[in-house]
Length: 175
Image (spheres, rainbow, N blue to C red):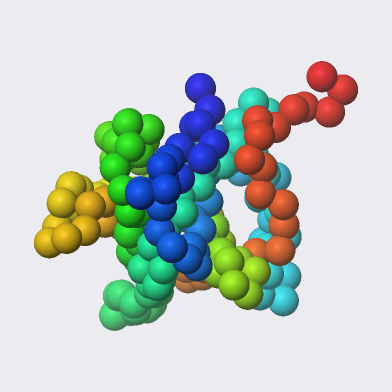
């Protein structure tokens, strides 16, 4: 079953944030065609090979809440371990269902700066990012979810991304 598109987009005007500056696209690890995964060329990955019938979901994040950080881990052969924190403002039934259904699941993650259009991709056959929530509900005068994507140590924790992002289920050629 494909993840519903737009499932973490605030549904009412009072739930919406005034200026969305980041969007995170998620593709479950099991929905990637790893046989067609391309290595980066000149620091860029140009396609996301999604299996037929699958697609990406996206999360519209609170302005300036997306803070990717690849910290060095390991002493013998240091590698980067990527963590992406983000905040989703508002609580909707669809948001809760997505969070509960996918807590602990592994994803390939693309994040986009909506002002510049620059995109980055994290996740590979050696390291996808695990989704968890740090907090959920009302915090001070804010209501929403603080989410975290964490990858395993990997020699290349993220790249630029210049490909298409499938937001509708992929159809096999000739189907």
